Figure: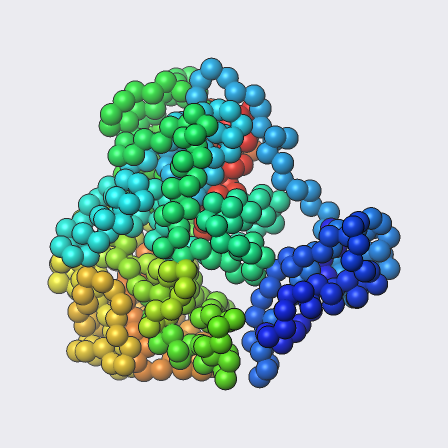
Length: 517
């Protein structure tokens, strides 16, 4: 297809105008032989008068010749073939594949295997979507954590209680396929044409339920509240999966347990080769949504076609960046182990909450010999925040102004904390190491020069943000199998090969393809 980019129009103009402009640039007219549609739409906030920037896809006979004539005029030729699952999978055998984890990687692996006739067995340690919502609500009300069903574990994985961002920089034809299937199962029209598509927590659990029902309708099985304990490996090859309820003979297993399945990694450390990998840790920072909208959109803030403003900020000077930005969202209690406070961000589809938040984190890497050393590092910070919060899962908070002055926050100012289990004023200089504090403070000043008000004294930090990605990678070969365990296919964020919903789903599909051959 031809991709015609750089079509900028006032936000009030219709998408049909953008399509017509793309056709005109190519010297084409609508006909039965030509298909043209919006491929991506993004907000161009670099000028006072905001505009939408469109990319339009055009499929027409003679694309190669037309591209040669139009090259350099904002027209590119996309040669990537459409993803066709039937061309990538083998034929089902007698034995059913096992999938550990029902997050994005596990769910899409199971979905594709089910649709190709493999009838997979999915093991998920947590509960289904409705159970998870009830467990999270109960945790917020009682401060009693369920270590098996929570924001990290259960149907949909950690991404279910997030903004549901579907953005990745990996170049893979499976990305468009995953987006189209998410659009299909979520019922959100036009999702795949947005530059930064998102689903929202309130729709993610329904999306996962629809995927589960599709898997079950094709003969697959999803076992909730069943946890992998061990793998039986003989002569370097998988023979069975051992769970807390069953011994399951199998020769193919996709291990997609998620980035917080620390006990699973510990149980398998002697069976599978692992190595430390880089990750990031820091704090959540909250601002008034209206302030961010006005800083990004000016007089257009609040326009119904724009929604809540997004940002992604990187400081090379201070080696810090924002991550998992949640417009109009809340800071959530994401602990999965007793005695630790963990934060994450969550938005519903409408993104209309009082505050906007993001993680402000610093890249780190454990350099010792223990492959699980990064997990110990995470736990140390989570425990420190648990103690600072009063040991009842309340979270420590501090305003930027107080952090700069080195004093404990006695009361948040204009920006009210959204963390649901209560907060206690703290001084993060006594919790974080000096290098991390200096990086966060330096980055806040730099970001304030890019987004007006970002470094306002009442910007509110909540700690700790530790689960940005897995600090461990399970080593796999060119066939995507664990290097010392044929038949085991580590996949997704927990295995160290993805960094978000979309990339995890793509990696799960790749593992499913290889496991089918």
